[in-house]
Amino acid sequence: MKKLESTITNMVLVLTGVAIIMGGVLAWVNHITSGPIDDQKKLALENGIKTVMQSDNVAVTKADTIRQKDAKGKEQTFIVYNNDKGAAVQSSTMGFGGELKVLVGFNNDGTILGYTILEHQETPGLGAKADQWFQKGQPGDIIGKSPSNGLTVSKDGGKVDAITASTITSRAFLLAVSNAYNAYKLGVKN
Image (cartoon, rainbow, N blue to C red; front, side):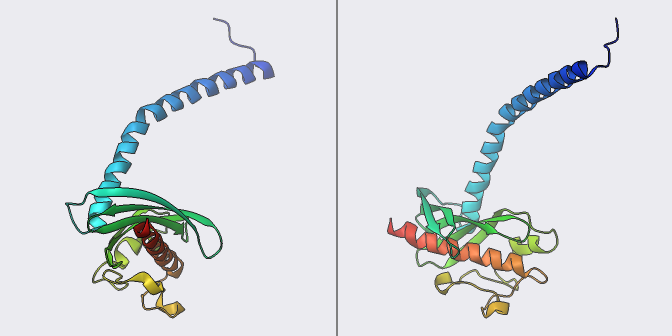
C-alpha cells in the first residue's frame, strides 16, 4: 500500500474525516447516555423534594414555573413543587465559582423545613461547605426560620453566620433561599 503524500490537501481531508467520524461517535454516545442522565436528574429531584420537605411520603400536586426579576433587574426562573406539606422551590444564583442551584422546602406557614444543594461550582473545602453549614444545629442554621424579612449574613447586619472564609458563597446561598421564598409566596397565590 502506497503512503499518502503529505500535502496540505491530504492533511485537511484526513483531519476533516477524523473530525466527522469523532463527531458522529460523540453524538451517538450523547444519544445513548441522555436517557439515563435524565432519569438520574429526575430521581435526584424526587429525593431532594423528600429531603427538603422532611418526609418520605410527599406527593407533588402541582409544579409551577415562576419568572420574576431580582434586585438587579435580571429575570430569574423558579420552579415551585406544591405538595400537601407546603412547597419545595428550586432557585439559583451566582456564587463565587459559578451558578449555585438550591432546592428549599417551606411548610404552609413559609418556614424553612430543609434545603439541599442541587448544583454548584464552589471551592472545595470552602464554599462547598454550604451543603451542611446552614443545616439544623450547624453554625449558620436557617432551618425553622422564616425568610419573610430576608436572610443575610451577620457581616451585613443579618443574623446568619457566614461560612468561614467564604462570605460570597454564603451571601449567594442566602439570596437564593430568599428568592425561593419570594417565588414560594407567588406560587401559593396561583
